[in-house]
Image (cartoon, rainbow, N blue to C red; front, side, top):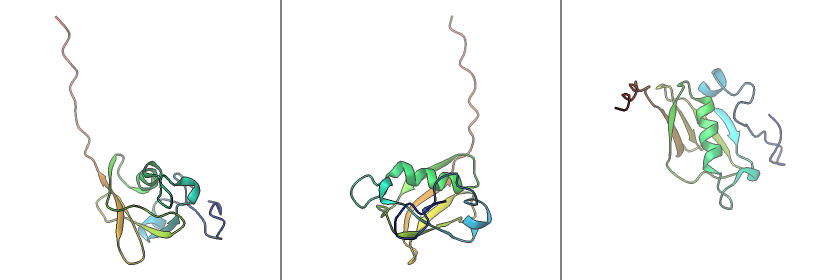
Length: 113
Protein backbone atom coordinates (compact mmCIF):
# COMPACT_ATOMS: atom_id res chain seq x y z
CA UNK A 1 0.00 0.00 0.00
CA UNK A 2 1.15 3.53 -0.56
CA UNK A 3 0.25 7.02 0.54
CA UNK A 4 -1.91 7.92 -2.47
CA UNK A 5 -4.04 10.50 -0.69
CA UNK A 6 -1.36 13.08 0.11
CA UNK A 7 -2.72 13.22 3.67
CA UNK A 8 -0.33 10.75 5.23
CA UNK A 9 -3.07 8.12 5.25
CA UNK A 10 -2.45 4.85 3.49
CA UNK A 11 -4.94 4.04 0.77
CA UNK A 12 -5.69 0.36 0.26
CA UNK A 13 -6.08 -1.03 -3.22
CA UNK A 14 -7.70 -4.27 -4.28
CA UNK A 15 -5.25 -7.14 -4.04
CA UNK A 16 -2.78 -5.22 -1.87
CA UNK A 17 -0.57 -7.44 0.31
CA UNK A 18 -1.97 -7.90 3.81
CA UNK A 19 -5.41 -6.68 2.75
CA UNK A 20 -7.28 -9.92 3.41
CA UNK A 21 -7.79 -12.41 6.20
CA UNK A 22 -6.98 -11.30 9.75
CA UNK A 23 -6.65 -7.62 8.83
CA UNK A 24 -10.17 -7.50 7.41
CA UNK A 25 -11.57 -9.50 10.33
CA UNK A 26 -10.12 -6.95 12.74
CA UNK A 27 -11.76 -4.10 10.82
CA UNK A 28 -9.12 -2.96 8.35
CA UNK A 29 -9.18 0.82 7.84
CA UNK A 30 -8.96 2.04 4.25
CA UNK A 31 -9.18 5.41 2.56
CA UNK A 32 -10.40 5.68 -1.04
CA UNK A 33 -8.16 8.31 -2.68
CA UNK A 34 -9.76 11.19 -4.58
CA UNK A 35 -8.09 9.86 -7.74
CA UNK A 36 -10.74 7.10 -7.63
CA UNK A 37 -13.81 9.32 -7.47
CA UNK A 38 -16.80 9.16 -9.80
CA UNK A 39 -18.78 12.25 -8.92
CA UNK A 40 -16.87 14.94 -7.00
CA UNK A 41 -16.18 13.69 -3.48
CA UNK A 42 -17.81 10.30 -4.15
CA UNK A 43 -15.85 7.08 -4.68
CA UNK A 44 -16.23 5.28 -8.03
CA UNK A 45 -18.57 2.34 -7.44
CA UNK A 46 -16.46 -0.15 -9.38
CA UNK A 47 -13.46 0.64 -7.19
CA UNK A 48 -15.51 0.18 -4.00
CA UNK A 49 -16.95 -3.10 -5.33
CA UNK A 50 -13.44 -4.36 -6.09
CA UNK A 51 -12.20 -3.45 -2.61
CA UNK A 52 -15.04 -5.36 -0.97
CA UNK A 53 -14.86 -8.35 -3.31
CA UNK A 54 -11.11 -8.69 -2.75
CA UNK A 55 -11.64 -8.81 1.00
CA UNK A 56 -14.65 -11.16 1.05
CA UNK A 57 -14.08 -14.81 1.89
CA UNK A 58 -16.57 -15.95 -0.77
CA UNK A 59 -15.42 -16.51 -4.35
CA UNK A 60 -18.40 -14.65 -5.84
CA UNK A 61 -20.23 -11.73 -4.24
CA UNK A 62 -22.98 -9.24 -5.07
CA UNK A 63 -22.20 -5.68 -4.00
CA UNK A 64 -25.08 -3.46 -2.87
CA UNK A 65 -24.55 0.24 -2.28
CA UNK A 66 -26.40 1.72 0.71
CA UNK A 67 -25.05 5.29 0.51
CA UNK A 68 -22.53 7.32 -1.47
CA UNK A 69 -19.01 6.39 -0.36
CA UNK A 70 -16.86 9.45 0.38
CA UNK A 71 -13.26 9.78 -0.80
CA UNK A 72 -10.34 10.80 1.44
CA UNK A 73 -12.22 9.54 4.51
CA UNK A 74 -11.04 6.65 6.72
CA UNK A 75 -13.53 3.79 6.43
CA UNK A 76 -13.57 0.33 7.97
CA UNK A 77 -13.93 -3.00 6.15
CA UNK A 78 -15.67 -5.59 8.31
CA UNK A 79 -16.50 -9.23 7.73
CA UNK A 80 -19.99 -9.98 9.07
CA UNK A 81 -19.28 -13.73 9.22
CA UNK A 82 -21.29 -14.81 6.18
CA UNK A 83 -18.32 -14.79 3.78
CA UNK A 84 -19.03 -11.24 2.63
CA UNK A 85 -17.73 -7.84 3.68
CA UNK A 86 -19.05 -4.38 4.58
CA UNK A 87 -17.67 -0.86 4.21
CA UNK A 88 -18.62 1.49 7.05
CA UNK A 89 -17.55 4.64 8.84
CA UNK A 90 -16.63 5.06 12.50
CA UNK A 91 -20.26 5.55 13.54
CA UNK A 92 -21.27 2.22 12.00
CA UNK A 93 -23.08 3.69 8.98
CA UNK A 94 -22.82 1.13 6.16
CA UNK A 95 -21.92 2.43 2.68
CA UNK A 96 -21.73 -0.89 0.79
CA UNK A 97 -22.06 -4.61 1.42
CA UNK A 98 -20.66 -7.60 -0.46
CA UNK A 99 -22.93 -10.64 -0.05
CA UNK A 100 -21.89 -14.15 -1.12
CA UNK A 101 -23.66 -15.50 -4.20
CA UNK A 102 -24.15 -19.28 -4.30
CA UNK A 103 -22.69 -21.15 -7.23
CA UNK A 104 -25.42 -22.11 -9.66
CA UNK A 105 -25.21 -25.33 -11.62
CA UNK A 106 -26.24 -24.60 -15.18
CA UNK A 107 -26.75 -27.50 -17.55
CA UNK A 108 -25.53 -27.31 -21.11
CA UNK A 109 -27.97 -26.19 -23.77
CA UNK A 110 -29.38 -29.03 -25.88
CA UNK A 111 -28.03 -29.50 -29.39
CA UNK A 112 -29.98 -27.74 -32.10
CA UNK A 113 -32.15 -30.03 -34.26
